[in-house]
Image (cartoon, rainbow, N blue to C red; front, top):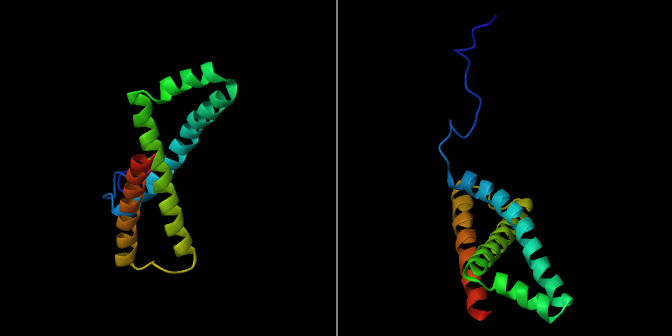
Length: 125
């Protein structure tokens, strides 16, 4: 049997220090999954709207509660984060923005944009 104690470690999260690019990439995947789950809540609300006044009132009670509003706030942030990052990737698909300073700058702009759009949505709505 071979001695594998001197073998190099393959790259994984315990080996590398998290960088902005890796954190944003992981967060993009997490927000994608959160959007799928959150969309079920929005579908529930729209179905309740079609279900009549009593059904809509109960759905509004659930989604209008403090916990419901917190969930919807973070769902809307995930939506804007995912959208902003998608636009960033579209720019990358054209071949622009791959130098490291631009990657970091666009990442920071994208995160800031997602927060600003979320706050604006909640202030207007």
